[in-house]
Amino acid sequence: MTDTDATTAADARTPQEIAEAEERRRHREEARLIRTREAAQRKNTASKDGQWAAGDRTPLNPNEEMKAAGDPLEVRGRIENLYSKWGFWSIPPGDLRGRFRWWGLYTQRRQGIDGGKTAILEPHQLDDEYFMLRVRSDGGQLSVEQARTIGEISTEFARETADVSDRQNIQLHWIRVEDVPEIFRRIEAVGLHSTEACGDVPRVILASPLAGVSEDELIDPTPQMRDIIERYIGDPEFSNLPRKFKTAFTGQPIPDILHEVQDVAFCAVEHPELGVGYDLWVGGGLSVNPMLGVRLGVFVKPEIAHEVWKGVISIFRDHGYRRLRTRARLKFVVKAWGAEKFLQVLQDDYLGYELPKGPAPKIGKPGDRGDHVGIHRQKDGNFYVGVAPIAGRVSGTKIQQIADIAEAAGSDRIRLTPLQKIVILDVPEDKVNDVVNGLRALELESEPGEFHRNVMACTGIEYCKLAIVETKQTAREVVKVLDEKFPTLDSPITVHVNGCPNSCARVQVADIGFKGQLVLDEDSGEQVPGFQVHLGGRLGRGEDNDFGRKIRAHKVTEKGMPEYVARVTTNYLEDRTSPDETFADWAFRAEEALIR
Image (cartoon, rainbow, N blue to C red):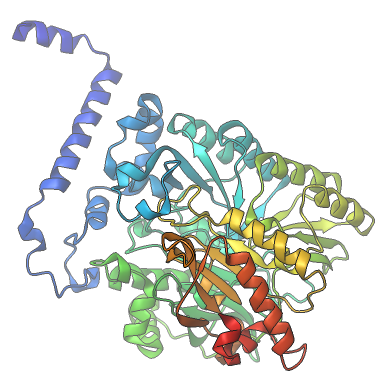
């Protein structure tokens, strides 16, 4: 072909084809720049933490380079106009494993890859051609129409998958990029979205599932939560944080949102002169370096909650450590500074005014659940019914059926909880039995066995690329075996199952926490899926909060896990000083032989 022929062929392209070609060229150039960036850009940075406040925004790792190349939120246009038409293999790595997260999309694990290969294979070898989609439902708040829409999307596009996560939202799997524009259209048509459901951004906001209905509630935090969402979610000002940022609100006098392990938490209190507002906590988090949040001891009026939230997240954006992902959480800033300096910087540099001192929230009693399972009266005389899916697993059809049950009872409000439970609000007294029986037919019990009620699990190796072991099915097996063996257990024992060390299922704060890893099977002498064990974790106990006890070199195989839980539970029941001694308290004093 001559140069003239080539020019004629190029001129014959439509404007859309020309735009698409230019987009592909831009992606290639972006990838080349990231791969070939001058080595000098990282030279002599070993002592730098990558804090923007220090005056240097040089990207110090691939994630920071990806974000510096352009606002990750902009990827939505490419998803809808390019990748959904060209297919999975048209997506460049920076978008696929990076920016897609800003719209709630993660590539899921390729099926058939065992846990021993998780840390060995390259990311592209672990990627399947499908996505997990996290639908954002702040405060776990869903209308009947919204829940039904999520259920329909699950059935039509996600092979019936649906898991209630411990961030009060629903996660779907098997999503094709070709279907994403239609899914976005449907969820946004009913007032939902997936904006910043994942990524280095302000994630889904936790709030009490009983917001607005609890008989004990001091304040309904929904207006403050929505104020933050409307002002800041999707705002480029906070779309490039060092890592994720987790927020929680509760109006309950005894917090029910695990405030001690959030980046920022607002807990309802009543000030003797200023009335009802919030007590402020910062810097909590779990993962491989768990830290409890720090109480700043100040009172936040409801009308300025959004300003205080903006101040805290701005500190994280500006002072967070960006060089190492393992240290890029607010908890490390709070640990380095301490509460006094953090508060001073917040007031002097970000708010411009001082916050008054205030009271602390009430502390729960040992054994308090806070999961909202069961049948309970609301302050308006109606009832709410809380039920426990096993480890949060439901399905598209079940979600639609839950919506039908709520609607038939005259309710339009469904709530998801931070403990993977589901609550239907506003049930008239004469409809309670209908709701309870309808949910029971779906294996959703309002009076479940203790292990059914108290088991939690992350996604696990079934779909997660970081996982080493199976979790959901293992949790189900624990429930099956243990509730049959201990049908009248008189003290709650929480069991949290995590597929890797990152603690998405909060293993360090469970009575019995299992952290997935490969372990040595003494019978076969081979490495098999198993767990490191944490015992006696607890939150909501004030100075008695603890991340649990680990026994040196003690591991449990995946197959041996139900037997281990049964053995330790039996030892607890036989050795406790009284029925009032909780499992966590016993686990800390028990002889090692009793908890092995």
